[in-house]
Image (cartoon, rainbow, N blue to C red):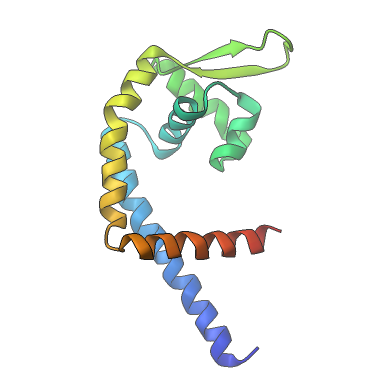
Amino acid sequence: MSSEDSKQSLKLFIVLSRAYRAVNENVNKLIHTYGLNPTEFAVLELLYHKGDQPLQQIGGKILLASGSITYVVDKLEEKGYLARVACPNDRRVTFAQITESGKKFIEDVFPVHEERIHSLMSELSSEERETAIQLLKKLGLSVSS
């Protein structure tokens, strides 16, 4: 590996990190206007789009430490957006289930959320977005294997 290759890799890492941080901070500010934190929003979005989820598996699906899930689920339950439901086949398993109030909430805010993300990403052309998706997927898969 040449010194130039190494410097280019470091630069890519920095640019990627800064871009992610800038986009993420922008989206998180919007999420806070909904009265949720980003983790609460991620759990609610997961339940809305994927259906009931075992509490033990939510952390892995939204990249959150499992110890924090109980706290997040408690907060969403207090707001009336989700309910805990016992698994009928295995009493050791509890599901998080989005409530009607939670569904209505997501249906109200998700179009704004989606539009904000699209607006942020529209700096890139459709072709550039597709290229970025493929390249970042390739990078992520190579690191995780």
